[in-house]
Length: 185
Image (cartoon, rainbow, N blue to C red):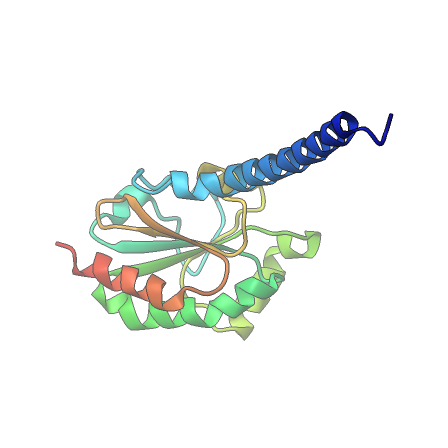
């Protein structure tokens, strides 16, 4: 029976359907995973909900109208975040006098990253001068629908999210987006 053409065809169909099912699941998981960040583009930037801020008093998005704001989600133990850090610091230094502000939302991955003294020490050692709200409860992370470290959200002068960058790389494109948003009236 297993040698008949009908059985072979049925077996090949089952194998093909199994592979198709795997591909569909992988694509669906990928789409659902990437969707939240993209879904934020064009929407008003949520307020940052954290009570503890370093390098600044608490800031509200409504008070930042007229500025271009980068909300960056990071944690000091994240290797990818450390690779992005020099670019973010340079953009802050270079464009701050043109109305650009970085808010580095520290959202810990591991328990030692929850300790504010460890965050302060890291910021001092790495000369991080922009405002850093501590997001130990992931309230701001959740408001943005974020799922990644690092993640950068560029917000225009009207408070609308206009660009999202997940992970490392894309530095030239991110800087072009900063420049374009600063140039808008």
